[in-house]
Image 1 (cartoon, helix red, strand yellow):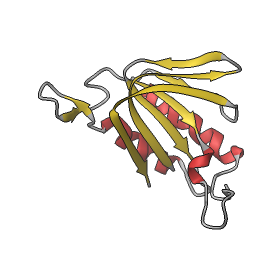
Image 2 (tube, one colour):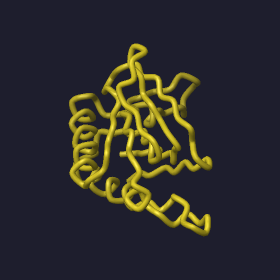
Image 3 (cartoon, rainbow, N blue to C red):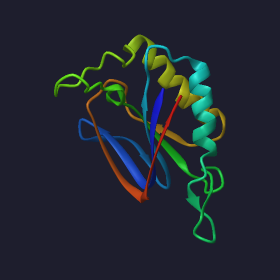
Image 4 (tube, one colour):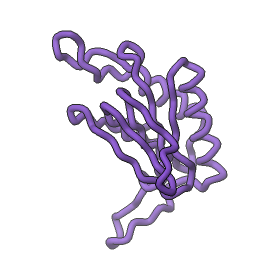
Length: 145
């Protein structure tokens, strides 16, 4: 499982020109799943994500986590994180999990973040989505296991 985490001032996701997810301060997360991922990998990355200390404290040091700043989550499924470009110029997505594996893990990831008390907005799995965000910093962190 792989996450691209961006600290944002705000973010939205649209499907067919309709906003289906919107957050203010927090993390916009692109989430990719590979064939071997399970709930174990998801739980590990949920802990890392929610405890990630990249928000500024009163001394402008990255010291606060999402809970401390009352941040929100916008989590978008992103199979292209597993693109393989080693052979030629057209990416292969053979390392990305098929929807029957990826979708339940994506749903599990989002639900577990909600269970831990965070406001979570999502995209629509498999849809053509338009994501807009204001990256704060910019801060972008890649988490994977």
